[in-house]
Image (cartoon, rainbow, N blue to C red; front, top):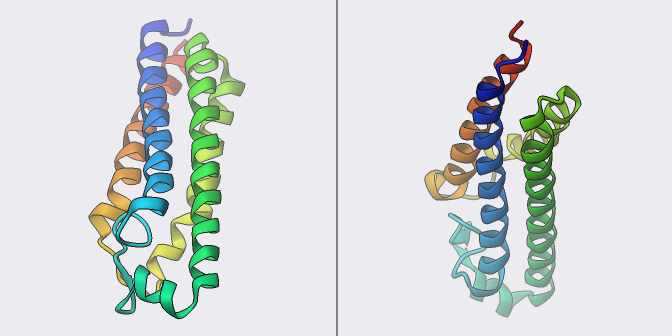
Length: 153
């Protein structure tokens, strides 16, 4: 028999982390238009500020902005999907929902995070990656708690 309380507690943590993913995406979106840097924790690229790059090559800045908005959209979409799967599927103990809820951010992070360790620009690690690492840690704890409750016989 499944441990329903454990499943629901884990699903709640997963859903909270999904809301944090959406918040990170919103911040990414807002900083594209109002931030002093390029994105959270990145103030300059090899000493070149956003304003300097805009004066030198506006097309590159608009392209970077385009990529930031697309990234924000995909992070938000993943967060929305993970929230729905966690809140409506994992809470009911549906294994397919748990697998989908875990797989979506794993794929996103597996693609996005490695490049941060082979970069040619400096960034503030805590500001740039800290929020997503914190949300991911909460998500993983929730996923493990809910899985444990689902597997309990």
